[in-house]
Amino acid sequence: MMWERALHTVRNSIRWAKGRLGKRSLADAVPALRGGIITAGILLAAAMLAGAGRPGLASFPLPYLLAPSATPTSTATITASPTHTATATHTATVTPTPTRTHTATATSSPMPTFTAAPTATATCTPTPQPTPDGVHRTVRVPILMYHHIADPPAGAKAVERDLSVSPARFEEQLRYLREAGYQSITMVDLVYHLTLGTPLPPKPVIITFDDGYGDVYTHAFPLLQKYGFTATIYVITDFVDRGLTPYLTWPQIEEMYAAGMEFGAHSRDHPDLRRKSYDFLVWQILGPKQTLEAHLPAPVRTFSYPSGAYDQHVIDVLRSAHYWCAVTAEQGATHTSDGLFTLSRIRVRRADTLETFRRKLELDW
Ligand SMILES: [Zn+2]
Image (cartoon, rainbow, N blue to C red; front, side, top):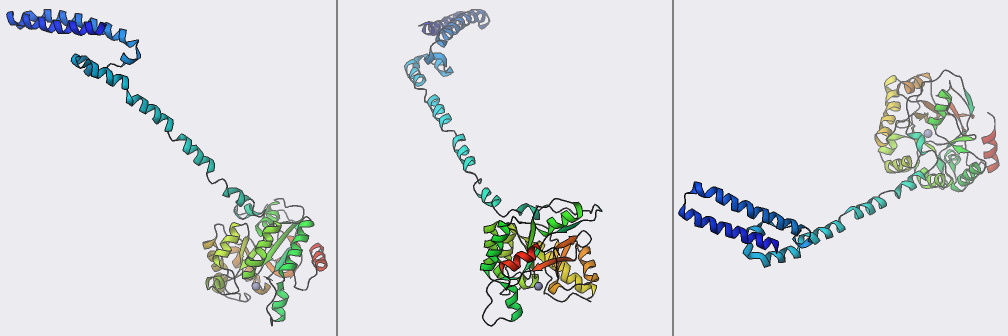
């Protein structure tokens, strides 16, 4: 083999140089040594080139060249080349495949459930302050007023009975609204329409609940979701903070908000707001707004007057606290752009039949 011949030449050159060094000085010996080494080098290079064509010898390890006596063992190490096969297996098992499966199963499944929530989910979040465009607008939007969605307990007073619509009746009303083509909007949607002319659906309706009773969560909320409606729930924040029994809890409020319900303030503890001091009004109007906003991610823009009672002073404080509108207990369904703080509603009573409900809804008032 060529490389064997080359190594032989190297060995001979060294032997020859040793012999010369014995007789002559080192300076004389150098050119002769150099000549021998160059010849050996050329032969070695030729041997390597010849070996390059053969796979087993292509990657000559340098120690092999320097220790020619170890020839058989070295060839064994080369042909084995375990490191090479190891790299092959490594590339095969490289992680991109598991990572891909991970991204495929990534949280896309919970997302559709969120979009499946009631139609008006998006309306609560974008709330830039609408600057009225100065156009006077009038629109007829029935704002339904409910309190309890429950059968009143035995011995309940006449007022409480009247405020309690049975879940069966409520469902009947929601079914009617859906079949008649009504679409629920929020109070903020109404404000945008009246101040900027933002379009509303052809048959808009607003469903409101005063006082924030627990049965709104247990009875009304599942039905609203079933029929695809949103609603506006007016909360008496101190009652929730104190954990009073007939009222909603913060987790219930947060859950309903996340499902697309709108929340408004109904004061701290339901007093008559008329003829009160400025400080008292700030406490009762700004206070519940801040409390609600501590629990909900969007600003609270709507207020419901406790027992429907208000005066101009109350409206002034509402405006300064950055509320955009307020609902009364006055009956009617027509709203104007200059009456955002005196929005009338339609009271739904326990005794209302579906026919009464339909007539109230469609009445031009
Ligand atoms: Zn109330």
